[in-house]
Length: 109
Image 1 (cartoon, rainbow, N blue to C red):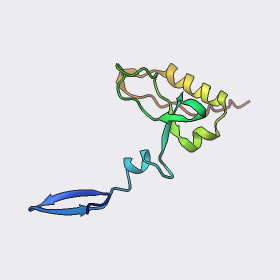
Image 2: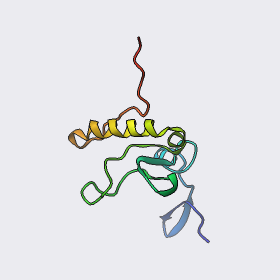
Image 3: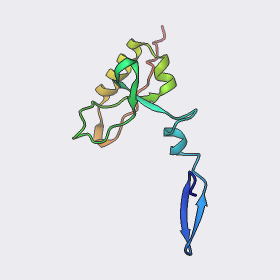
Image 4: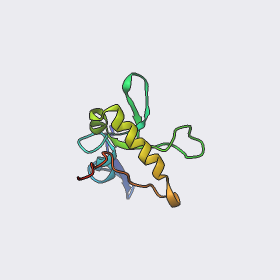
C-alpha cells in the first residue's frame, strides 16, 4: 500500500521518500507559514479564494494581492481595500511581480 510522499524507482525497486516539509511546500501549503489567500477576490460568506490565478490572459480575476489567511482574517475592510488598490496601482513591470506592503506605514510627524 502506498502512503503519502514521494516514490522513486531505483533499479526496479520502488523506494518511499518522505514528503518534503520545507521550502515552498511549507510556505504555500497549509500550516503556520502557509495557506495564502487572495484578499482582492472574496468569495461568498466572507471567505477568500486561494492565492494566484491560472493565467493572466484567460483568467477573469484581477491582479492578486496575496497574504497568509491569518493576516487576511485580522484585516479590516479599509485595510484590505487599501492594500489591493496599492498592489494593482504598482502594476506588473517587466512581467515581474511587485512587492507592496500589506499595511501602509504611518508618516512620522
